[in-house]
Amino acid sequence: MEKRRHNRIMMGDCLAVDLSDGNGFFTGVVRDISLNGMRLVDVSKKINVRSGRLTVVMSAGGKNFKMTTKPKWYSEKVQGKSIGIGVEILNVPPGWTEFVMKNEPQSRDVDVWSKVSVRN
Image (spheres, rainbow, N blue to C red):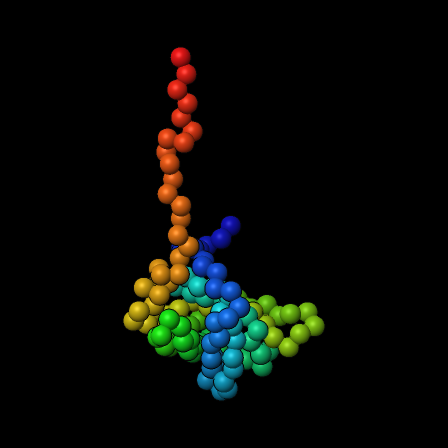
């Protein structure tokens, strides 16, 4: 059972981020986002996810988003040098909500009459 309050929005593999654990600087890729979190992949195993806080800087849509985040989970690649991290955004920056909403998939209009059959 998932505890998500907001749906994930897939971002592909082209959105890079810079991260800091307070001791070093790292890069990663945003895999998906939501109003209050994101999943980061291809982050160096050297990052200290147990620090409790990560600063994430992301540039997208002509804007820079600087966020303080809290790691919620992480997973290591079996034979790789990188990890994936799920983070909760603690301070949602200005413009973030609009950015997320703009990237939400557009749902098709549902035709409520499409399954109605008129028979005598």
